[in-house]
Amino acid sequence: MSNILINPNSASITDLQTLMAANPVAIASLIDHTLLKATASQIDVSSICVEAIKYGFASVCINPLHVELTAELLKGTAVKTCTVIGFPLGATTTKDKVQEAKRALKNGAQEIDMVINIGALKAGYPNVVYEDIEAVVHAAHKRKAICKVIIETCYLTDKEKITACELAVRAGADFVKTSTGFGGGGATVEDVALMRKTVGDKAGVKASGGVRSLADAQAMVAAGANRIGASSGVQIMQEALGLTDDAATEESDY
Image (cartoon, rainbow, N blue to C red; front, side, top):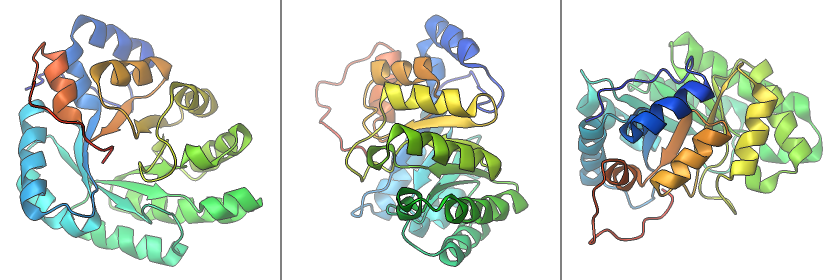
């Protein structure tokens, strides 16, 4: 539905804010339409692919199990296939994360959202975290895919958030991402602003977890996000289009 394509890697935050102020529908090009629930079926995945094509979302983000189906359904469209690696805990080995990423890429994934080794970061082993990120980034870039790095802000101090972002940039990540949506909290304006301040223009910032309305999404962009992860993409677009859905029910983050 959105005819405005935003390059999340090149558009400045000021440009995004100006564009969305003039045309709120442009937010569609920043949304990763997300379905990561354990109960997600092939029918559910097919439905969100139809929605993503209709509204012109940036990607459909699903668990690795559904990559092949999603890639097939999105073939020939501008909507990308995105999946998650080491999700949601980040507590698999680097070797396992790389193999998982390679399988997903082979099955058609074009964007990879990986979870860092949170325990290693908390314990003060930045080299372990860096090597974990770099290995997955390398696998993604070898297949010309984008890699986003989930730092799971709800578990981190501000100092740790900065360190995680710095490590992701050094490892060559394309984006840093706030949350899995399965931890103790989601994206906040404060965290997005801190992450943007840390990475500058060296990486994108994805706000995910708890972004349920157009106002939420606009606040994240104002803070520095240039990608939004949300299961409420349709609701956000209905608001942007000035529509209401009285039958809509509260959705979980994912």
